[in-house]
Length: 561
Image 1 (cartoon, rainbow, N blue to C red):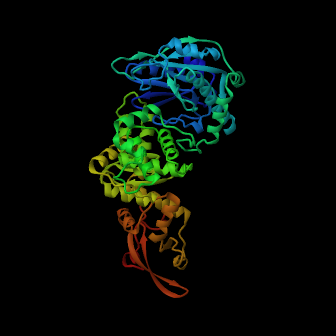
Image 2 (cartoon, rainbow, N blue to C red):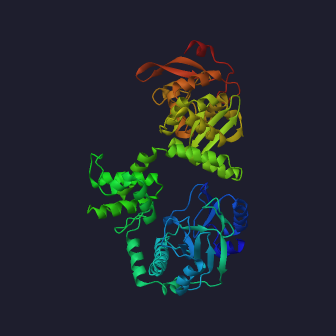
């Protein structure tokens, strides 16, 4: 395994990451050329209870535990490949080569592979480049994509000439089984994934072009011209076909699917092609089909009945989204919570990776990007939830645990109304929030009293008190009256939001000001338009630094000025 990974990724430039992916947990482990040993150690540890794969394309960054690099973000690849299934009870297809020897004989017209791997129920072959091909922009990525597609289509031609089929595993984000691990597709009969042959042969793209048929090249170029826009999960191919084995299985086992395919559903009030698209898509989604397989099914369905193919991404994206809700309900948030629970309970995952995955799940569940959660070790404990530079403060565990208070606090801080959850789901989400927290010792600023003192000190540095009360009438500046600083809450509230990203109301600030000894006073001020009255807070001294003359409120402050 070590030698295999080093031959593929040993010369990977700094900053680029290759993928080791595992089932059934669907975990992604990202490695660099310098951490190949760690990848081998982990794969060896997990080989008995997980199917393990590697990516032929590499990523520009480590994408976390639950993400794989999409094909339109792949930063480069190590070569071209093919995946040939052999006749076996685990495969539904019947038109497959019976033996390894037969398959290799068909492949003998292609150059010697760099690696030939027995995957347990088939063969996986790699023809490596002299060094990893790091793409210099989108044009090179497209060039590599077309080369890999044309290579596999050329191989398919050879197998189809013998009456066999080979899957179109053409995308740059393709994963293949990692030699040295086990194939657990049939749990009752695990198979070793092992190296059959290795070679020092390496090939440039020009070397490989000589083995590609003209027909395969044209098909690859046609599919490339119909490639999915960035961010899409599917390609719109006017000649798209569903997976035949999966299609036959549904046709034979689901009467509703068969009737929808033939437009024979009398229970559907809407007999349009779009209505049947929705029925077919929902049933295919429930059967576990990928987005691409579902889109191919719908294109083939429309082509069969002479309907407009509607080769627009928006139509198929909407249909897929609606089909998933029809099939499973809107479970994205709940699924995110469940996936994060699985990560949290896995002792093999490092704590920093766990926290990153928990924050992603909390973000998905709240529909709000959560970047950090801090618990201040005060009495009672306080919490702060961050979304970028903005934050929401929870003054007690009750504010965090109470769903109504939590939703209201996030709404006020981030202007986002998060979904409402059933009690059991809410409890799980709160536990994820607690698990994702980072503990900090509570300094003075973590307490309510410390916070208001700190804010006032900063506020009065930004807006020094004026000595002439007439200057405060319109703008609401802090004012020093008989040596005592007086403030108005309205400009303080505005400053707290613009300078500190803290949302407070006058009703919230009142008790906090009282708690430090400030007193609310009705103050009479003389202005150009005559005498006016303002409600101001007279701040105490007590070493806080904003008064300079006396330590107590003046008599006129106690009476009102």
